[in-house]
Image 1 (cartoon, rainbow, N blue to C red):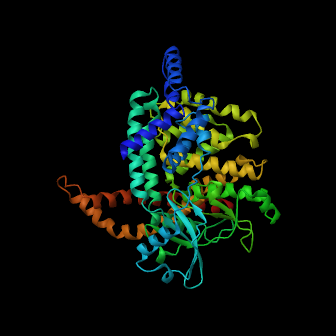
Image 2 (tube, rainbow, N blue to C red):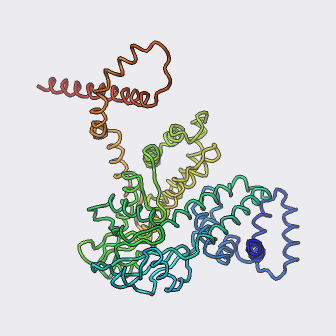
Image 3 (tube, rainbow, N blue to C red):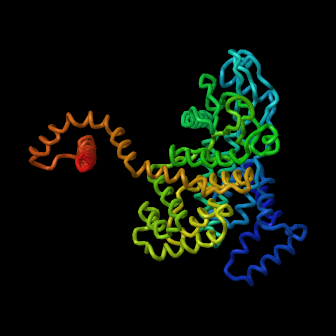
Length: 513
């Protein structure tokens, strides 16, 4: 079976002229021309008049849903792909016919161990959405609550494993025969796709993502998320609150229902930066099909997020790096951008700041010759990633997801409001976040956060001091003791800092008296 699938892939590749994508990267243009001409004469029935990017997209659509999803992932790797191919692959839509309702019901009964009529008061057999991995049905719980039931596509696991194996073979082949193969890292990209696809196969993971995002935005007027009904969830079934709203792409319908469209655009930017910088946990699949807007009730005008299979996470180091970069962009401080890369450890320590600064200036300066509202922050970040590779900066996977999400948010925001100035909308948020991280409020928050550790550490100080003074030989490493000692050193620095702050405050009060 795998052999037949491989033959089909080769046939589709030749039919759409994907061999030309490889040949056009050969070193000798004359040889490339002769090979392309020979291939065209041998397969004269091929129509290669369409641009290369369009032919690649059509080939992936022909190969089926798993390859469509792979193309969607490739479109996010704009640090690796030519822009024409990345832009075209971004048009791929995961449109898959639904599987029969009988199979959906069988999956539910398999998961719950009892008939579907004993699980739900009502179950709508006609699906409302279908994709390559799962489909969604509406239902009503026994207590009357309306829910959406997401069911994993039956038999999808072996199909995915089969196609992933073929993609791995293709990736190895590309690295061998294509001059640019090693630079584009196809094996790394396939491994990344494998990871995210398996995340989507675990609906308990998706339910946990949804629950976390809902908790992060609890009480917010900006974003509404469905409640997860955990008693009905499993790895193959996810049951959540049914959400009522209008898809974000229906702008005229939203306007007719009284939604403030410019405010909606600004709120989208605020939601993105809140997820990234406050929470370090963000919805990474924010295309229009996953975003609705509430048009009735007290939450009217709020966003509704759906489909939580892919989320991104950022560490404190990542957040600090991004905030410093964004603020430096706003101020056109390219030296600071270069220094932030090196300080973060993503650029080698031996990188010359002046050379890196000059390269970043060449990327960013052209954007500032236009009004700020015409500048794409996502494309600035993309160009920065591409330039960084010249200095051996490895773009981190979490930043690839972030850049893809930023492009989605920015495109969505400007579709809602063409006059949206993303930079000016984001700047106050970033400045406030930086002040909270580096100012007096940050010190207060750190002291409050570490207070529980102080209560645990202070009683151990005499024992630690006694052990240090009475040690006559180098003891065997004690991990617990080393951790305690490290925390004590951290506590000592915080205590000195608190003492200095208190002394400064007393001195200030004395001078004013």
